[in-house]
Length: 279
Ligand SMILES: NC(=O)c1ccc[n+]([C@@H]2O[C@H](COP(=O)([O-])OP(=O)(O)OC[C@H]3O[C@@H](n4cnc5c(N)ncnc54)[C@H](OP(=O)(O)O)[C@@H]3O)[C@@H](O)[C@H]2O)c1
Image 1: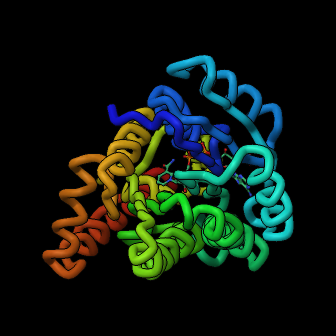
Image 2: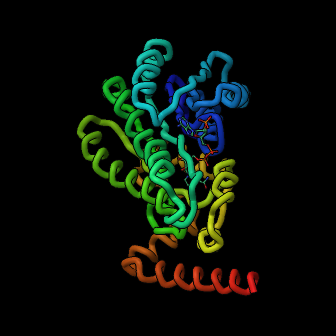
Image 3: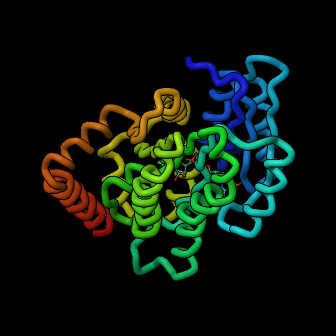
């Protein structure tokens, strides 16, 4: 693994799932790590795990409670973080929610806002607060989008919108960062086995579940390892997992026709199954 010794890595969503696993890997690579999320108890527990992965006891592992969706909170906390921990060489934007995976008609304005404010504005807020400090270090920004940003999904009108918007945001920002010698990696994993899926399962329609099964599921350790490898290589687009990469290739080559036909058939079969269960 590439050495990250002497690097400072900020990770939003660092208390759980993919963000936490990335924290452990950067720590194992010798980096100082600052984990950011809202819940302080979860952050403390995560920090212990990240500390246990350290290469040397001199590495600093910190935590900071912040709500990425709230730009006032982000600006205030990042000013303090820069003073206390120094500017990040790597900023990983992994904070995200998928609470309202449901039929569009069931998604209220408030629900839609919450998803967009956390996933899209959350990333925007963090980068906006830290970009100036990262410039002199020629820093690297990582954005967690999703395979749901590459393909449409049944029940994903809020989450999928936030993740597709992040791809557009990343594509534009990359052009601004490149002349500054800064790197950007945007990540599109398929389903990853993390607590996020428990939230999603509460409302995800059966059709959505069936569509998600097409791309398979991976562990957060696998996803995190793929992302850290992409960061080490300075890769722009990271799609963890050969199956998702294959599906994306087919999607591009067929101009979406193949993906839509397969997904339409999957939805049709899922609905037939629901019909049979109900009758
Ligand atoms: N799991 C998947 O299937 C999957 C697939 C593709 C992409 N992704 C993306 O990967 C990223 C990580 O997902 P995950 O599966 O690791 O999720 P997770 O295990 O549920 O972790 C989400 C993290 O985000 C934090 N968070 C949520 N809202 C926040 C807010 N407003 N402010 C600050 N922190 C916040 C959570 O902590 P607090 O709640 O304490 O704040 C937690 O640390 C997300 O962006 C997700 O969309 C996930």
